[in-house]
Length: 94
Image (cartoon, rainbow, N blue to C red; front, side, top):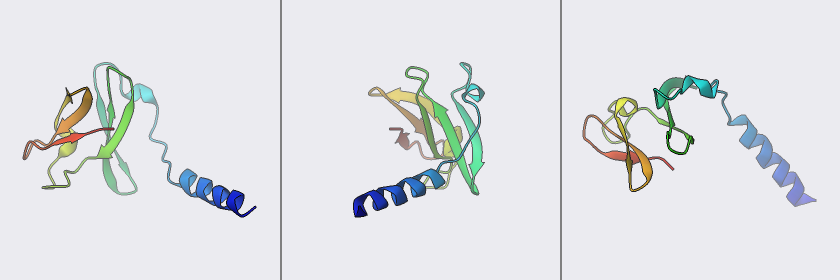
């Protein structure tokens, strides 16, 4: 009984963390990214054109504070990555 109560509490916490960001059509075939603000944070939404997977990441580089969301998007070793335009560090998506 205790484990089912714990599971229920975890489900409620997880549901509270989801944010509706809009329709997937905002990422059409001509653009792989869009920028939104969620709870005061700048977030970049990326679409992998090969797999159609959607990824979300912080738009601000955690190394130098640069505009990571506008960096070059490329595939490296089969994984999608974005390169910080300020210091060329590559950040990989899942």
